[in-house]
Image (cartoon, rainbow, N blue to C red):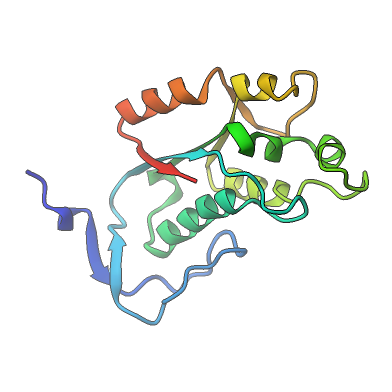
Length: 173
């Protein structure tokens, strides 16, 4: 049986700036339980949360950003953070390219997608962003472009099952 404290330890978090500055970790002045820096971590973020406001970044996506920052605060290097975000359901429109996003939400054409900066920041940190093709087509986006470098999953359900079988922890956002 594996002991839980072989995966986390009580320590002070790193004082290095978070890689994605929009959601910095709180509580850096306290000793706390952190993932071990030498560990390898796999996380699957099943992202289905709708946006509360069309002009603000999606709260579910912000949770993935926070996870990246928390593992960085524990000094887990990028090459040992294996994270995948799969958007489906009500989160799917968050991956529309800027013009289509503005049109979908009735915003001025030059508004842009408020999720773009977070998605690009996550991608720079090695996080794979996927869209469920079943949801994409089901919402009528078949002929509409997604943001750059979004990967396509035939189904968020089957990708989710496969990644969990491969040891990825499921985080619903």
